[in-house]
Length: 262
Image (cartoon, rainbow, N blue to C red; front, side):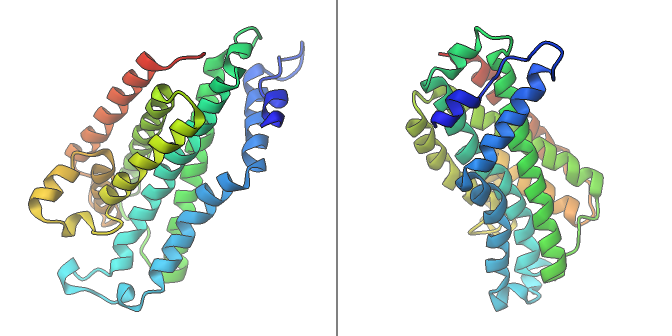
């Protein structure tokens, strides 16, 4: 962590690169140094997909799933897991540790504003999650012959809204947590219910109707349904896109309201 204190947020030298690009390079370097970030955000989701695909019954056509295989339903799930892992397990502890160590306070005295670091972290984790999502799609396609999304624009829109909602929830966790260890605890507490809502244990479409109706109004249940519809070639139901947008706006507003730089 001492490396972070000495490396983060160098003032932009006159005539040199902008403060924002300097912070971005610094954060990318620090992100790559922490092997746990790389394992969680890039390795874990595709590896989980491969493990699930090794189950023979998951590769068999299931008449109860409209002729799909279980592995077909799990690709959107692991795509969402890449977003959730970055937003809940990686992003909040990093940001909270910066506040805990006084880095944000010291940054306020330099040309680099703390908000630059916040948006850089959100951008970095969002991009890493989206790269991992694409990697999961490619692994599913090449290894298990899972069809690529047929409604590409609808899939991308649902994915971007899901990423915005996930990062906004992560920002809210960072806002209310007093220390990095608290952010980790809160993130883990939210993480497992979020996994359930994605359909990791029971596909959302296979849940009992009453439970499915509730899960559809969570950001991750709505995202799972929207991605599933786009993958099948249909435009995502506007209800699911609206649920994602509302979660993104409301949790962003709450994070801004309660976030403390010191």
